[in-house]
Image 1 (cartoon, rainbow, N blue to C red):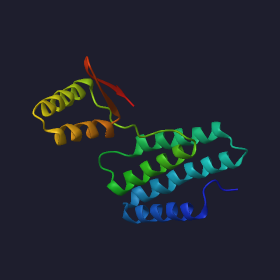
Image 2 (image 1 turned 45 degrees about the horizontal axis):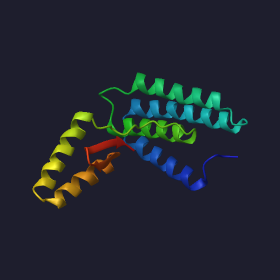
Image 3 (image 1 turned 180 degrees about the horizontal axis):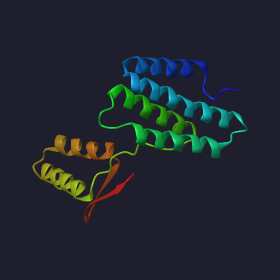
Amino acid sequence: MPLANSSSRISSALAKFFAFLAASGEEKKLLTEAQGFETKFDEAMDDDFNTADALAAIFELVKFTNTNAGASGSREFLQALKKEILLLSDICGLIVEKKEEMLAEDIEALIAERQAARKEKNFARADEIRKELLDKGIILEDTREGVKWKRA
C-alpha cells in the first residue's frame, strides 16, 4: 500500500517531469538515477516500514546529491534534488530545513531599540519590534528589572 495519497504522487510526478524537461541532458540522466533512491525508499517502507533501509536510501540520495550537484548545475536540477530529499525526510519525520536563529547580540540590539522607542512614546514601533522578535521565536517579558527574553 503506497504511503502518500494519489494526488500528492501525481503532483510529485509532475514536478519531476517539469524539472526533467528543464534540465540538461546530463542532468536528465542524473535525475533518472536519483529517482532510483525514491524507489528504494518506497520499497523499504512497503516492507513492513523498514525504516533502517528507508533512512539508508535517504542517506544515499544525499550522498548522490553532494557528489553530482555542483555550482554548474541548473536551478531546476538542484531544486528537484532538494525537493526529493525534503519529501523523503518528511515522511520519516526528519527535520531537514532549520530556521535561522538570531544571535544574542542582534536580539539585544532590537530590545535596546524597542526600549528607546518606548521611551520616546513610539509604541507602534515598539510593538513592531516585539512582533518581529516573536515571529523569529523570541519571547519578551517586561519585568521590574528590565526586559528579559527567551527562545520559544
